[in-house]
Length: 359
Image 1: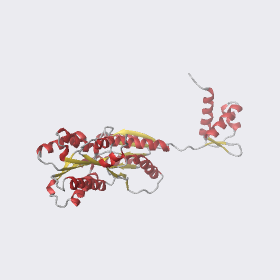
Image 2: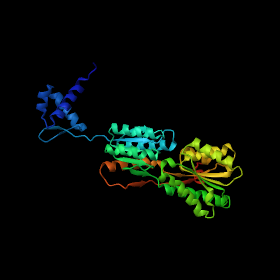
Image 3: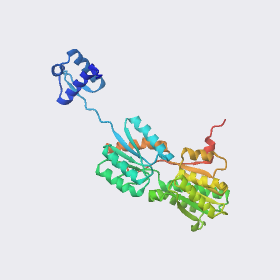
Image 4: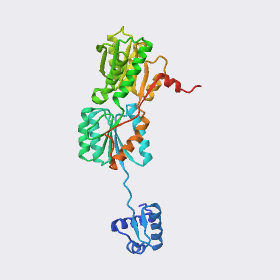
């Protein structure tokens, strides 16, 4: 056995004070542990210095109650989604800065996995749960399990029963995307538009779908004569490959249309639309505005003649600090708003190129 004698003696003293649960003198500790007074004295002074014990004016030693380190559970949307990864990194940095432990599980963009992860958070008795999952139908199941365990819940982007909401104002970010698309059509196509496509995310529920509602309203406000039948919603599910296939199929069905506006619920979906246009060599026939402003979308906007003309930044770097602050406020019993909106910002190709360093 490889034991450290002085460490064993120190733990004997600490455990004695824990078990007695009352102030003790150096003499009584010496008698009960049979450790030399000199060693007891040095160990006690070290524990006092490090904050594990306190010493009163009458020479009595007692254990200091140390606050339990908080642990948050975070169910990430998917490690394969760039925005989800950026949220995770922001949260890890913010939690580390305030000494909060994180138990991170990947929901894999899947309802059943998200439910299992919620059960694991409950089993691990985390102090608070931050849920980032896309399936609205799973939300009440997840929320009920967490509420039954009496654990506070914060839901990112998708509302959950009993949860405090955190995310963007979905209608407003959609509206600004639509306004940007309409402005392009007025500037470059003299207001002529054949189709307005919303690459939607119905699985996420009506709140996230309001991104497309807002985008369509932004276009209608600027182009009030646009026929209602030219507005089309397609379920891209926020995924690149599916969005690419859907837009590819649409382009094949409409080979002569050259003025297409595409509003995407996520940048990942927007990049799928870019892939479809590029594969069919129809980059000049459509323009796209996405959501999230992920790094790959910004790089795409830097490409000459890219159909991706903008993305609404959800300012992901602010997520971690805001979520940790919100979580700590809930645990302290402070009153917080039921809906907590983050700032957003329209990023365009022009602003991206303007910020590019010159060589």
